[in-house]
Structure formats: structure tokens, C-alpha cells
Length: 559
Image (tube, rainbow, N blue to C red):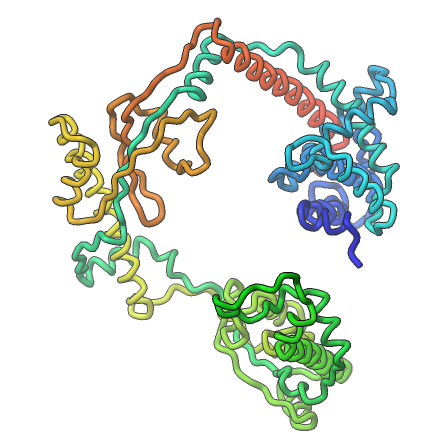
């Protein structure tokens, strides 16, 4: 049974697996990087000291990256969109901070400090964003029984390190300086009250007549030929092992069917009932199961048939390997002996797998591993949407530029779409001029938009939004509208911004700037926030420079 902590990390912190992968891959990067000084003929192991770590030792790499990953999880409640490079940078700066903590004789974190720190960690926050003792207690209970290798001692050690690292960063940060003009700019951006109206032009309703000549298409094709290059394609056949062939051999018991249902009942929603039929007062698992039992049994039998198909394919692949059988007469004889058949596949690319096998990306990836370069022409057993297959490589078709006649229809469609979008942009300029003209004449915004829609021949919808500020922006305000605000004064209309299947004009009905004097309480708050941000930037810049200097000390010399 999956423990709570395993479920919690899988649901909320999937990137942790990426970090663990990074931990495993980093040694290979350093070993095989030509600039690392490793992987050459002498195969020497060169130390790369880094604030108490040796970056060329896998154990130290795992400790460095593992602690940083756990720290980020605890503090952010997730990695907050951090990618592997950002996690690595955080690991390096965290190591530098702890090195400075030792150099500056910052004492070890006390139990009271650790307890206080725990209450601020997002991983233990409840729905209200505050520390949730129940979540913390459950975390600890399940941590003791989990098998992910993380212990309470690890948690305490990392938190203690984070406390010391924060003390260093606070010392590096300093007071943080910010100019009054910067405060006013930020305050105006955040607290200006906007009343906006929008005019949304429907791109789909715009259908201009586009009749390109063959010369137009030929020119467009030449200018955009890269778009029509056909990437490398594998030509292959496959030996099919359909799961349906193994279905008669599958038997299941009533207990197994029920256990499969109980393991994940949401996979099998019960049939919809008549609206007039009253819902049961209490859930009845037995009745729910009875209503979907045939589907559950069929799914279970197919799943087991799939396993049998994969096993049969694996046995056949092993026999081909042990017999050193290659495509040709030997393979033909093998197929006849084992009553198997070779089926053809249409050529397919790496990005789009064979259509006959559901466009499987995994199958395409394996197919591109075959060929003369690898010395393998027959794949291992591969799962397919209908069972399992073994691929037999024939050839690799190189990248080629097709003639216009071969892709004529696609070029014509692309040309028409490109021309339509260009004309839509030009129409947007005309619509803007028409709306502005009507507004100057005294029309209300919605009437000006209606008039422009009538002359343009496309659907344009006007809408007025309630007043808001960026600091308290409603969740239903389209984020794409906000990009126009910095360029709009009261009474001005923006250019048409095209997004997906619509073009949007933004009209500033009203614009009320906030009090920008230092007597405004928000001025002080904003100044403190900017100062804090500036101070953190300074501290981070120092740590980044320290990291770079330390890495250069042990950087392998190029011969």
C-alpha cells in the first residue's frame, strides 16, 4: 500500500523525480564532458573540490543535490516551477552559504529555531496557508514507515542548514536601497484603478476571399521551404502479438474481479440513472460493483491478455537474439516455424510513430535505435496499444525537401491562413480608427464598436469590466489585457492584440492614479518590499560570484 508521504510527494512534487534523475545523470555529465578532463584515454579521476564537496564523486553529488532538493520542497511546498538548472544553482549557492556560515562561526541551529522554522514551511501549511499541526504529525508518522530513504534526521539536518544559510543571506543582504522614483513607479503600477472596456473581434467570422496563383504558392513555398522538409523516417515491419489472441487463455475469479474494482473504483463509473430515480441515501459499494461488473471483468481479462502477449513477444525476441537471426531468409524461416507473420508499416518519423500502432512515441524511439549504427536490426519486445510487437528494421529515409507538387495542398492551406492573418491585422487597424472616430464624435463605446462591426463585416463584442487594480486584480480578468495598460491613458484605445482565434482592443474608460506621496502607507510598504528585493539581489549576486570563483579553481585545463 502506498504510504501517505509517497502519495503526497507524487501528487505535489513530481519534479523531485527529475531532481533524482539529475543526481544520477550528473556523474555521467562530468565523466563524459570533453572539457571535464575525464573520459580520456588515461581515465584519471580528478578531484573537483567545492565548499567541502568533491563534484567528481557521485556520493558528494547526491548529498549536494539531494539536500538542496529536499530544502526546496520543504520551503516552497513544491519546486514552484523551478527547472533542473535552477535547482542546481540553488544547490551551489546553498553550499556557498553554509561554507560562509562555518567561516563566520555562525552557531549550529538550536531545537527552538528548528521548531520555529518548521512552522513557516509551506509543505506543512493548511488550506489557509498557516501551519497545520495535523499535516505535520501525519507527515512524521508516515515518514517513519516510508521507503523513500528520507528520515526525520535528514529533515532536521536540512532545516538546520537552511536556518544557518538564511542567517548568512541576511548578513549579505544589507539594508537594501531604492530610489523614491522607483517606489512611485511600482506604486502607480500596482494601485492605479482601471475601468476598462474591451472589443473582441472574432477571427473565425473573418473570411476574406483568397485565391493565390501558382506563382504566389511557389514563392511562398521557397520562402518557407524549411516548414515542409520531411524529417528522417524509418521504414520497418513488425511481428504482431495481439492481446486478443491470448484472451481465451485468461481466466479470472470473482474475488480477483472484485479486488481489481476495489483497487480503483473510479475507473468504472456506474451507468447514469434516470433523473427521476432518487439517489440512494448511503453509498452502496456492492450495488455499484454489480452495475459495472462486466466492464471490470473485461478490463481485467484484457490486461492479463496484454501481459501474455508481452511475454510471448519477449520469448520470441529472446529466441531471435540467441539464434543470431537477422532479417532475410533466416527470419522468414523463423516466422514460418513459429507461425508468425511480418506486417508492413508506413514510413514514420521520430515525432510521429507508426499510425498502424497508434502513433506510439515509445515505439518510434525504439525504431530509431535500430540500424547499421547500432548493429541491431530487430528490436526487443515492445508494448503496443493492442498487445505487443517486435520491430524489424529495413532502412532509414534521410531528410528531404519535397517538390511543391507533393505538398501542394498543405502549402495552399498555409498560404491562405497566413494571408488571412495578415489581412486580419490590417482590418484591426481600420477597426481601431473607426472606433476612435465614433468615440470622438461622442458615441458610447458599445455603440462605436457596433458601428465598426457593421462596416467590417465581422463579429465584434463589446464588454465593460468593473474597476480594478493590479494589486487586487479579479481572477476572471484576462491576463493578456494587462500588457496594454502601461501604454494607455484615460480615453485611449489600444491596438488590436491577436491571441488564438480573436483580436482584442482595450479601451481605458477611466484611470485613477493613487496617492504617490510618502504619507501614503502603501508607499512605505512598497518601499520596504523593493528594498528587501534589492537587498536579496545583492546577496544572491555575491553568492553567485563566490560559486563561480570556486568552480573556476578546479576547472579542468584544456590541453
